Amino acid sequence: MTSLDSAAKQDPLYTIFEQHLFNFQDPNSDRNVFVETVIQDYLSHMRRLGLSIPVEWEHQIFEELFFQVNSMLVKKIYGCQTIDEYTAKAPAAAKRKARANYNRLSKAKPKAKKVATKQVA
Image (cartoon, rainbow, N blue to C red; front, side, top):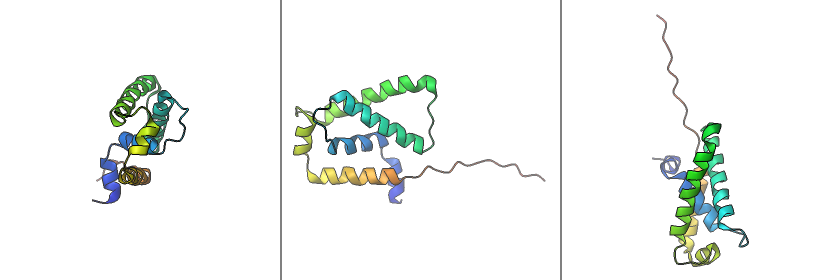
């Protein structure tokens, strides 16, 4: 298995979430802005892979992703008052691993679609 294969097997939403968490820069930003930024990055990644979301489903998908990312944030920073406090306490190894996972994810290419062809006799 190549590193790109392992990146494809990871949950891209969690990988993107961790990258944003460990690279959080704006202490004045509220939780909603953080979550929305993660979602936008995730949706951009999905579009690069060729996934299209029907317009009539966008709102529901955004709401579900918002719930998921917010839940990840609550669980990840449990015991800390702010994201800054969490990132200050987080081990450097966790930050390096998150960065490496994100870099692998950003290099992942969409799988080629198999096209059925008819053979004419």
